[in-house]
Every structure is written in structure tokens, then in C-alpha cells.
Length: 347
Image 1: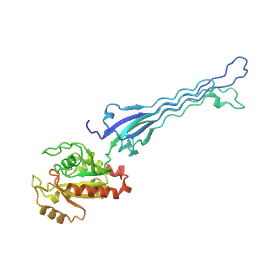
Image 2: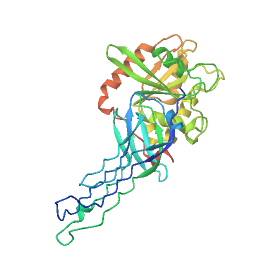
Image 3: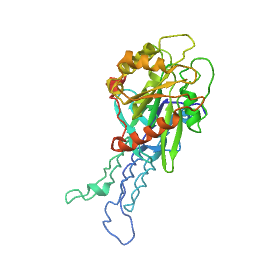
Image 4: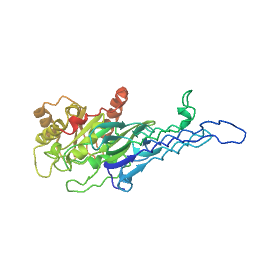
């Protein structure tokens, strides 16, 4: 199924049931009095995170979700049945916005987390509620209130421990395919990855992490060039970035300049993202000289971790994966993803 990470929908909560005007009419019972019951509350609309769903594709088919209306009150002081709630399953990592105001409503990051997006209407009151010492036979009741209605915009930001960033054809998809069971498209032309691919990397018994391959970035990605902002936002959920560098570019481009280009795009998109922990992973070392890496690191003045690998021949992968697992285990307290503010994201 094609990956879909944005969707719009309309949610409509149920209307509250009307109150009832009724009087007790029974043989041998004089002055029976009012006995109209209240209506039932209208059903609410909830979004519920589901770890078994990984796309918003279903919302391309069903655009409107409605909860049930509350039942009207009845005589003999019988209360109407409340409307059934509408539960809408969404993938974990879904961010919910009000489409009209742009307000951030909630962030779905935990399995079975529920978010109220449309409040059901309040029930109407029957005439029993209005009786008093001065009004023994009230003939008024109140109608149920209308349920809340909203247009929503959903955005899916994938939840993964580590994200792969880099220029097109740096070898990110190949790396994902050899360390996990994911099977992204691999070819010798740019932008073979058109949507994010997630794989689970196992480094030992009960030790694993999730790795997401994002479409290649180009200059101006933060302003929407190429696949741009649409997929840069997925890096916000990750705790660590593997910056995959092509050490043997076929076009002979400057390797250090390509590293700076990715750094600039991350910084333009978000200051928070620019400060995320990032490791340089020099790929294609089976066809490149180690002197290239030394020269690039020196030119950049890079002080962070540096790894030399060949995803195709699996050279140098074990130290990279083990170190990444160790880093994630040491930073478990930071497991909650840092979400970039709405204003910063859409600058």
C-alpha cells in the first residue's frame, strides 16, 4: 500500500436527545404530575492510536465520521439512550490540527491513546426537572444541544529511533535493506525512495531499534524543493540521525560540500532538528580511499562520531549498529520524541 502521510476529514459529534413533556395519566391516581424524562447525551468522536496501522490511506476513502445522536426522553421518567461514540483509528505518530484555525489539537504517540476531537451534545431536560412548589404542572422542556463539528488535518510523522538523511543515491536504501527486513526500492538514479521506509534492526537477543529511510534531500529542501518539507518533518520523531555520505559520487562533486548542504537544510527547517545528535556515516568505502574521509573530517572540523562502511559489502556495519544500540539504551529517558512547534515547522 502506498505511504500516505497527510489527510483531511470531517468529524461530527451526535446531537443530544430532547427532553420530554409528559404527565402521568393512570386510573385511580389523582394529580399524577409531570413524568417526562431527560434525553440522552450525543456520542463523541475520538481518534485512537493503533500501532498496527502505518498509513493514512483509509482517509482518502472515508472523509466523514459521525457519532450517534442521543435518544429523546420518554414518559414515566424514562431517560433516552446516549448516542454511541465514534472511535476513529489512526497510526501512531499522527499529529492532529484544526483545519480552519490551524490549532494543534493533539499528538498521538502511544498505542491506544485516545484524543477527543468532537464533543457530543448535552441532553435536553424533561418537564419533571421543572416542577416546583409553585409550578406543579410544568409544560416546558429543553432541547438537546448540537454536537461539535470540526474539519481536521492529520499529519503522520513516523516514530523511529534513528533516521537516515543524506543526498540522493548516498546508499541509504541499501543500508536499510541489509540491516533489516525492509525492502526499499534501490536503483542507480536519484529519488528512488519516494516515501519513508521503516525497518527493525536486531543487534542481539531482545535488543533492536527502528530505522527509517527518508527520501534524499537536495538544496532548497527546507523550502519545498524536491520532496522537501513533506518528508523532512519525519526526522522530528527520531532521536539519532545517521548522516549517510557518498564518498565516491559519480558526478565527482565535493564530499565536504555535500555534508554542509545537508547540515544547512536541517538548520533551515528547524533549529531543534539541527541540534539533534548526528553521526557521519561514510558509505561506499569499498571503492573509496580512506584518505578521502580524513580530508573531509579535517575540512569540516567535525568532532562527532565518524563511521566508515560499505552497505553493499556489509563492511563496518557491526560497530555502527552496536554503538547505535548502546547510545539508544543510554538515552532511554529521552525516548519521548521532541516535537517541533507548529509555528516553527511551517515558517
